[in-house]
Image 1: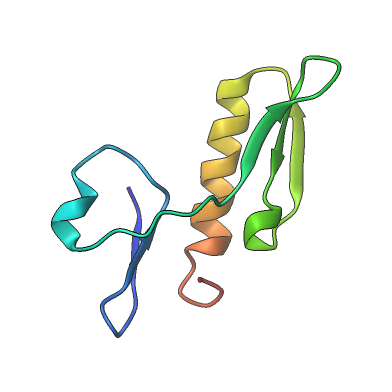
Image 2 (image 1 turned 90 degrees about the horizontal axis):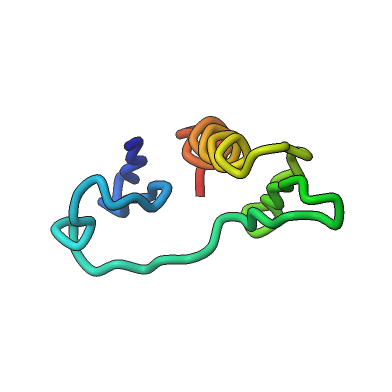
Length: 83
């Protein structure tokens, strides 16, 4: 799990239950993307909640979820472009 910690101590991450995030302090959880099927049964990743692109289509949901996490960690959790 990748954590981005601001100079003020605010922590941003892609939500996971790898450990109890509440141990870091009060949580504010917001949606970073939507992973939904299209009419053809393929999976699309919509990253518009973080001003990102649409990814896909993917034949497997697991591939869409992996792509979603990769994009968020590379672009949204980057110290240069992060939240």
